[in-house]
Every structure is written in C-alpha cells, then in structure tokens.
Image 1 (cartoon, rainbow, N blue to C red):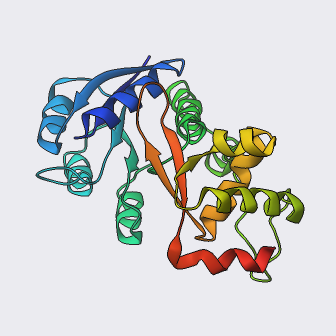
Image 2: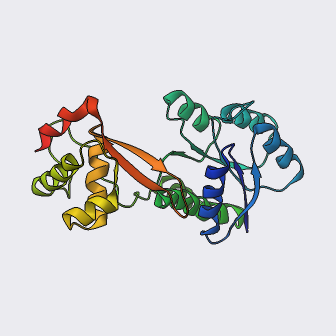
Length: 241
C-alpha cells in the first residue's frame, strides 16, 4: 500500500484530496499536515511514500518545505497540488524533483492520472534491481492525455478538433441568455439538450480563450465548476463564430 501524506492548510481541500485518494486502489491517505513544520515532523517519524503538497501555507511555503526535504535526503516523492501557477514556482518544484504539478482547480481525472502514473513507476522501481535502456525510456517518456480536455485555439482562430461552429453558437446564445448569472455544465447541457461531456469541452475551450471565468465550488461530493462571462474578454469569442 502506498502511504500518502496531504500537506494542505485548507481543511475542506484537504478532505477533498483525501476522498480522491480513497477512490484509488493501492493508495492510503495516512496523514494530513496543515503546515510544513507539521509535515517535516511526520516525515521524521513515519514512513511516507508520496506527499501531495500545497505551495501557499502559513509559515514555510511548499517550495521551502520541498527544499528542506531534499536537503535532509528524505526518501519520499512529491506531487504539487496547488493554486500556484507562476512559472517560478513550477520551475522550482520541478528542479527540486517534484514528479507532477497539478494546478487548482483540476478534474478528478487529472488527479487520477497523476497517481496512476506514480503507481506504475513506483512498482517498477521497487520490484527491480536493474533496468535496461528500453524499459527506462518507456517509463520516463510515457504520456497519458487528460480525458475530455480540448486543444488550445490556434493562432488562425480555427476551432480545436472536435468542436463545431454551430454547436458553439448554440452554447454561446444560451450563455448570453443567462447574462451575469454563474452557471454549471449541467445547466447548459439541460438547456441546450447537448450531452454534458460535449458541453464541458466547449466551456473548457471558452475558458482557455478567456471568454469565461472558471471557478471551483466545494460542497458534498465532488466539486462543481461554475462559469461566468469575463467582461474584459467578451470580444474573444467573435473570432470563432
């Protein structure tokens, strides 16, 4: 069983991550730490395989914690799970050996992908004494696309593969009818009679070009994504209609 420590000062987010882990086979959320100090104390006394680490915390931040973990030669792997999207934070985390970096808000599918990739490599590395180059290349270079993600728009303003102008116009008209009211994927799907999976692709696309603002609302069960028109970027959609 892979022992996981969640380092997160927001209790609601920590519990959400814990529930995510509990849905994964072979993973156990064994400890929750609210600060870098508490997490370091846990590492000193407990066998932890994987740390899910936030950047923004009281006291030492996640990057400082990761530096201390490496200075102390702790035998532990780290995945960043954080709202910190600054390039400097991402670069520092990767240079300090973070094996993945998840930017909040994210889908459970992306979380699952990160842990499945970790589990696959964890068992390979812990059940072999040696690897040949082919095996190592396969492990290091294997990639898994995130489900339901859309490609970013191209510079010539053509729609990403799989999206159509007619469907975009339908969803766009529905969004306009809501005016300033935030909405969810399910609400648009119900109104337009378009599948939830398809609607989500279009909303993700509209978020990627800045037309929509995406926020994550926590509640019972999985978080709900809410969308609203970004008043500063309303004109961006006109290139695609």
